[in-house]
Length: 351
Image (cartoon, rainbow, N blue to C red):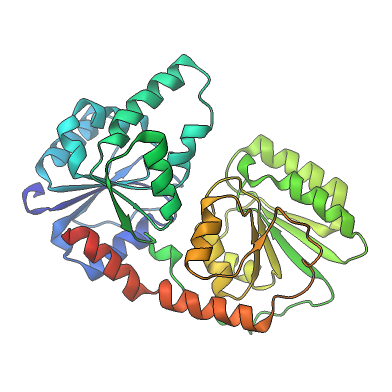
């Protein structure tokens, strides 16, 4: 029954939803957590369990959300993307104090994306009231909390956690994967979201046509017309040395892909792809990001060695120094372990 539950998770169906539910059920008291799954998301089959309910887009689901929210002591909003959810919170301001927003990035940066229409401005002012009065914000990127403060005037408390088991450091044995060392493999971006700014990087790489390299772009989710555009451009510029990935990869396939990568470039103009960056650094890869976004600060805080896309790329074909590589791997082990993740969530649940 809802009565025994202490913690309500409102969470979309995304690729890390199942691993998160498993993580909570294995390491905390299962009976205290209720997971309400919002929307169909990536559509992977959600685990079945007594404390997991998949919601439909109907009134019964809305009333289930309302009842649960009002009965349970603490609410966790995994991402703040659903307008319906934002409205429900706006209409029940007494709930906001017990709400904790797990900031995903896109939900925060909505602030600076499209706000032209009256409708969008209205929605944004409703979101502002909600965000301002939330009890807590959970993110591993302190800079995002500061942005929420300056953009939305949030008064919520800051909790550090790198949130999901998918962000954990894992030991992967990549030695079995054959590498082809007569060319450099360059991974660009993590999705077909225009914020990846692919073309910008393509143009920078054109200066190095004396080098042999292959460009790999994961474009399986995001904006499909943008993806088509990137593929056109990529094929025109790099011909056979351009590989777009348009199929959704399993984690194993993703690892196999990443294993042969020498350099990864994330040219996002905002915090994004932190999970990918963490995986790549723990595999000892050379990673480039912009130095004017909160992720750069995050890497500095955790003493992780990354390179800046804002500068020239002339050293891109030089392998990362052994010592820097080793230091990244060690730092990842210490700071992104399962034990640390359990500790972080323990603090959050018991506060």
